Image 1 (cartoon, rainbow over the protein chains, first blue to last red):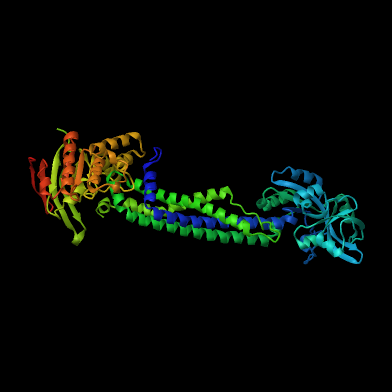
Image 2: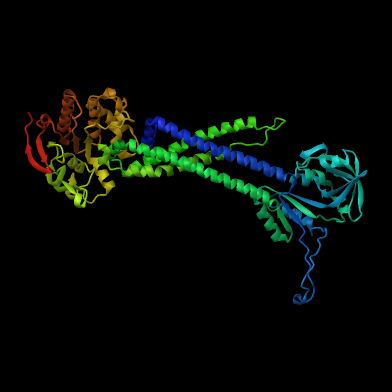
Length: 406
Length: 233
């Protein structure tokens, strides 16, 4: 008996220790439940963050575009034509993009700002002719939004005058390598011959076949956007706030702001429903753990009738009896969660050994975050206490006369 | 004159209600003075245990007044009864009722632990002194269920005395023991009564034990039929 321990804790621990087999079985039961929850959570969050990372490897978190052009008929709107032809959207520059870029740079939510001049073009080499998206970038800024430099297969990220970085797919289709030349033409007739300075692989076949990175100035000339940019790409510190940040920028600037959440609505919905279904599974595991704890404690109250009666005769109050059993629930929950976290950790270690791709590197990173263990311990303790409410009430209400006689 | 340790006036106890109600105690009047050593005798089914449970505040009478150490119990809630019971009454049961998860010494200290909330050195010192008194100082670290029947009952007596209660209720304290252990246990009760002035009310149907008490109260069919001083042989 340690002097700091209250009577209820001492009694709870002694009762659990005395009913050793029962206690061990239920702690293992709780542990398995917690292990499944922790393992599943870690796996799911690893999987999801991996999916999100892959999806965003070629996408900015938020893209700012010039406002949509709307036809505004002159004169009395009531007498205007019944059918209004929607206006075709030309390629335009964002007004005052330099001060806007500098202003956005100061927002604490925004990690990087990268102006881009982009538009359609054709890439021609010999007889091959491919439709591509021409992207004029400031490579240093762009690399902070979409890490291109790290995804180069050959050459380097250099887009000076007369240089272009193309995807491996386009390179294959055009039969071009680093140092080879290709010709870019636009629909308006502007054309320029560029040297391939690097080949990238962003993990997306479409992007690898389509994107052609050139210097901002080159793109401006080709696309007839003198001094302008057609979009501003943003990277955020917190992915989940993309929609909120986009909305604030749109409201403040009048620009169209698309977040990756909106651009990939179906994907995000899929992620959300995956999370919801895993929450449902977690809830039911927690429920079955709670019923397990409750049933063991109900049996324990029946087994300990006589001891409960003696303690009551010696002056233990109903509240004290109640607390003894609530604590047993909490202790079982806590011990179970520690065991469960250890189990989950070893499952994950095994997973890391087994789940490897052909090259032997892990499919994706999963880790048990310490916070997850803390949450599991707190949650299981709470579940234990809740599960013990009914048995504890039975213990408190036990008639001492009956209990001692029985 | 000091308050009686125990005063019962018109105590009735009815079990069940309506048609099936049956009254077990039909108006019991009883006083127990400090230091008295009384036996409560009577045939099985006479209501002895029921009466003892009422006096021990483990149960409530259906009618009548009961006071412990001058304090009326009628208006107390469960917590109030528990507090009064813990402070003033010690129990010795027939089946010694120790808590097996605790050692002998911890069992003796339990009433103090329950009352004070946390263990301290003083309560173990008291437990050791009491175990010494009942002759079990060398067994104090044994788990309660590893002691013989007589030893367990001596530990139970030590436990009943832990809070220095004014009244000890003993329900067939020697009922489960062989004659030699029974004599030793009974002798111990008598000694404590003489040394500390603790009052005892002992339920027994062993006439040999009853004859060794100062007063014999006889209960038959829920009524006190005899209540007389006795000169122990």
